[in-house]
Image (cartoon, rainbow, N blue to C red; front, side):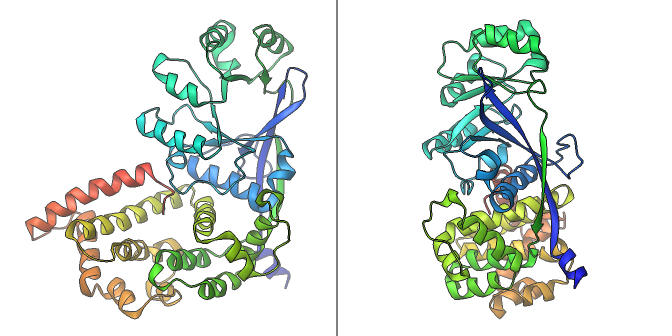
Length: 406
């Protein structure tokens, strides 16, 4: 029994560092990724996975209200998350989206940030260095974070002066000494963050594990809309105690605004709704897909989107089935199980399973062609080759821009 208990849980860690005002009162915390309880630095290999882990830990394990109280939660968001059309299942009044310096400040990002702001989120520009071409981004932002340690006094002063004409609040980060703090105060800086005030505090908790097969089954049900049913979702969710725990904990938190507690799986699913459940499932999946697994997820998504776009190019019906087929055709690599075993545990029609396993029918043929193209094998029909070439480039672009938009 002890072994089963150990297998059902793991540890989750994150760090928080306060952001204070000129009176040294806390106005917010930056929530930071930590690999484990003894990690002193972020050591981020994959920004998307790190952000997903911070948000999922905040939502499902610690509770955002326990981490920041009524203060703001500053979280680093990489470009891929910022371009996601599904959004993030978190309380937007408390969330400050930190746009990282390497986010690629182009028209696509600007358009996406406008959607986030319209949805009620606040923006902070992290490690910012002023340039006139970035003016539209500054106009959208509520906060601008200037790195005191990197800039030094002279360049920091120049940045503050360049930003005086904008309606933004400046946060001096990496304030290491009393002298740094006094220098920033004399320039009229409003908020501060750094080792002089407090080092990041690492917080660790036990977390209930979620079976990746359960997440895949939910994704399958949600994407296969023609056969979607609450009864089936309830059956899938109910088989995973870890997922039930996370969903109920999320819904019972103050962030959801629910008056009554949620004490049944069916009620949880009904209150969350299809779109929110899809976002939560994606979040949990992405929090596991770090390092090599993140690269694998990209490959799966490229194949799935390539199959869908190829079907669309050909005018085939039910194009979402091609996406699902492409995704599931690589699930054996993702789970370490045999493909027939994985598919046998998913709520899929036999003809759909045969298309994936035996490449039968139009769906199976499309999968074959997509796989041949991706592996550099010869495509006999020239029209097939041209269609595959165009749709592959579109699929890669889609994956790059919408990494979490499964």
